[in-house]
Amino acid sequence: PPERERGGAGATVRRDGGHGGEDAYFLTQHSGVYGLGVSDGVYMWRTQGIDAGEFSRGLMTHASTAVASGTSCAQEVLKDAAAAVKQSELKGSATVCIVTVDLQKRMLRSANLGDSGFLLLRDVEDTNPQVLYATEQQEHEFGRPFQLGHHEHADAPEDAMCWSGSIQEGDVIIAGSDGLWDNVEDRCIMEQARDAMKDFKHKGMRFVAKTISDRLTALAYTISTSTNEETPYSRDASEAFDMIYSGGKKDDICVVVAIVDDK
Image 1: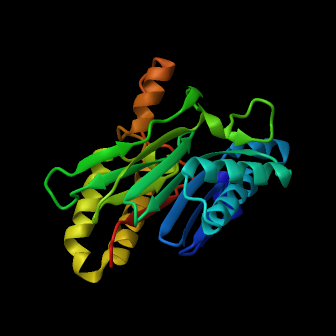
Image 2: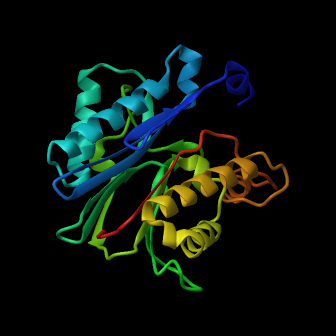
């Protein structure tokens, strides 16, 4: 939003976690189990003097602690984080997506609440990469996603959509807030992953993952400022309001990419 641009809302980006605006994320590992997550605080709490970014950052901090303490089930990580935030009496609400990867068991587990989410891709170098799993947005109505929060109408961790499945070397996990999914088509996301893998595989998977994340963040931002491009958000808005809507959606954008790599 313009007022946020004028206010100079900054971002902190580190390998193990960070935040920008109301979005936050984490990355951590413990004994071969890797955890990552994204959370999007609900901006409208600002009208009541509440910074929902504190809520999303709290969720990610406590989720990271849960994984680092040995919790490998994504839904349990979500429950632990929600309980810790409630105990700390933080105000606000946020969507949240948690993914854990157990490399020894070759198992991915996820818990997603709201309109953040992730894609699991395989064979990204092929002409037609496989989408092994894609989260579905959970909304009570258009523009009102499921969310954890301090208010009485907040949803519960048990409302999260959970999934588990096997993984193999080379699989790509792309998690993001709705700033990504509202603006960029899944097809374009797969193309960015494929191109980065082909161009930079020789530099290692960490470099490829960062390249994918950087490119998707930049692409989502560019599309978000468009007034005439057809986007996932414009299609949903046109259907919800029975009118023709075009363009992207200006929002915080958070993208976290991980690649299964035995090395």
